[in-house]
Length: 167
Image (cartoon, rainbow, N blue to C red; front, side, top):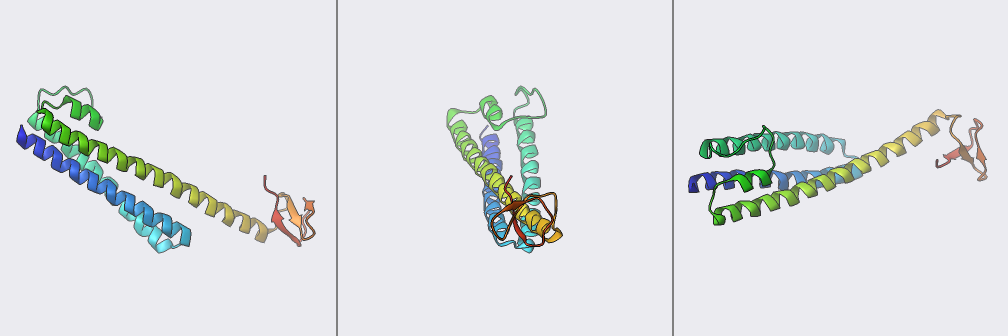
């Protein structure tokens, strides 16, 4: 049983390290989005894909270790949560507590990854909205209400309309 607990703990530590790396990659991506560093954005995209693959492999390894060491463990489907596995493991309390600690640390990192993912997505949407506005000005889109140089709103196609009306 100790061998199984050690294997699971080792895999969970690797998974935690992957999520911590993911968190750092998302921070780098946030900076790259802010500075519009396309090269760095592509690098972070590749790094995120690699980390997702590693996490999926680790997930499969955890299931495999559980199946190998605890064949009697109830298995309802291919999907599982870490909580389900920890609760179902027939291990001594001490080993379970170590695994629970790792599970909580992984869940905290997952939350941070989700948070930074949302922030980065919003930042990209804002940047794209600015680009859309610039392109509309360049194209002189007549269907968009704009402010003239005198601060009056107009829907007419005029070359002196600088700002579009916020909708």
